[in-house]
Structure formats: structure tokens, C-alpha cells
Length: 127
Image 1: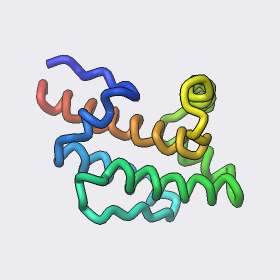
Image 2: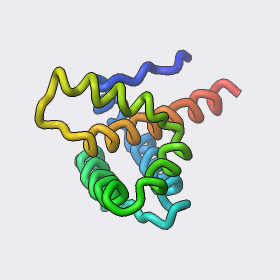
Image 3: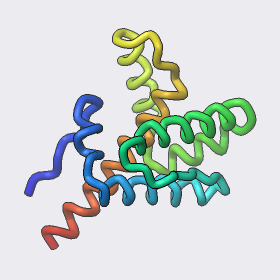
């Protein structure tokens, strides 16, 4: 079993399994919860990505305005470097003018947390 590559194009396909969605959301809730930030989810699998984008986007906007250090700590905890965020923003500038940096950061958080879940499941299955 090979670990799947996660790209912007295939994230929706990888997030189509209910268990993976719930594990990814739980990981996001855990990481943000360590900083007393609640990320709620209504359980609707069909809109999971959009819900996460909206919730994370609102929290990121708030943190950018009020507590950038906390945002940096959260990104460090999630294992998202400044370089990854800057590269994602730079790449998106050439392709989609409607995407703002808050949405890009939210998307990168979801991708990173999904990678954690898939990696954990991969090693559970081979062990």
C-alpha cells in the first residue's frame, strides 16, 4: 500500500470517505482546541470541506487581526511552515484571483491535517 499523494486537484476525492473526513476534522479540532479555539462541524459530510474552509477562514481572519503570534503557534503545531504558506499564496496568485490568503491558509491547514490522518492510517495498516 502506497501513501497517496495529496494535491489541490485530488483533495476532494481523498475527502470522500466518511471516516477520513471525521478523523481529519477531529485532528483540526484537536490542534485548534489546544489554543482554546473551537472548530465546529455539523456532521454533514457533503459540505465538510466548505464548512471547514468557512470556520477556519473566520478564525484565521480573527487571528490575523488580533493575535498573529497565536496563529503562528497553531501553524507550527500543525506543521505548516511560513515557506509552505508563502509558496501556496504565490502559486495561487497566478491561477485564481478570487482566492485570498485566508482561504489559502485554511486550505493548507486542511491538506496538512488530511496528510497526518492518511499517514497515521497507512502506518496502522502496515503495522
